[in-house]
Image (tube, rainbow, N blue to C red; front, side):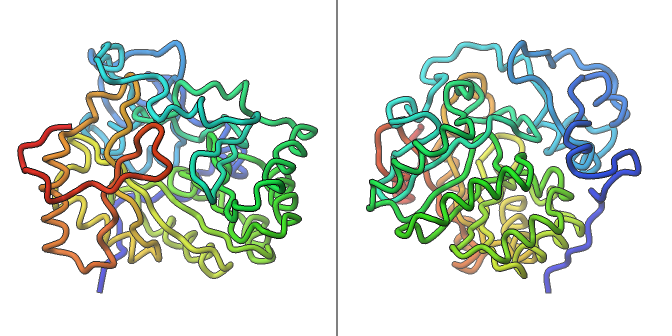
Length: 346
């Protein structure tokens, strides 16, 4: 049996009355973050002019105090390495601007469209491939929703709508319901997928109103969580994922391979096991998208393949996520050929 007992706990602090207050109260300055973690000021950190520090208290509670190398902290702590200019890394690594036919909609894959319903996130992950994305130009207002729905209605090859952003669960339940209701009116849409990190970094976002909304929705609901390290999974998150599953949602997870965070067999195998213990199936293990400012998180494809072979050795097939890379101008995620020569570099 897989143990779900965790060291850290992300339950709501007495300082916040609800998830929206908790979201608004996310830490956005380094001094406060270091004070909460009993850390001295660090020379290797910086304060970005754009895409600054943002991390909820619930996620900070999962970090180990006094450890500057905590794997959860390293995902959110701005590093001076972000200022390096390195060839091959760009502000639009997936060339999304060329798959953006109307405001707020990306149509890269034949049967799916992705809607950027918000530019807001609860946490600013330092490796985010959309950290340079122009959300101002791609966030539909209420009256612009109809144009998005008209596009989907006319493209009958589309049977799945992905709500993304930003993070769609940073929307209020009222706003989220508005999007879901409009999609529900399109007969050829079978599934709505939400890509979200909020239940992980701010579990109280999964409230009774959201559960009711999911339970009574007439389309398939798939929730793809973003969890990179087993320390992100605690007993409180497990309680919330159980609520989501009981409401009828299918829960999947996608992770990113990150240097010195999860690029070892112990971490990756434990992550898959703990995900399954939380009712979540491992879905994708991504090679880092080559976004400007995140090169220090990247690992060689040869190292990723080596790790993947080890995962195949120690885990049952249903716990091994697909190793993929998203490349610009390809209408699908590219599976990594694990039979490549072991010394091939990305």
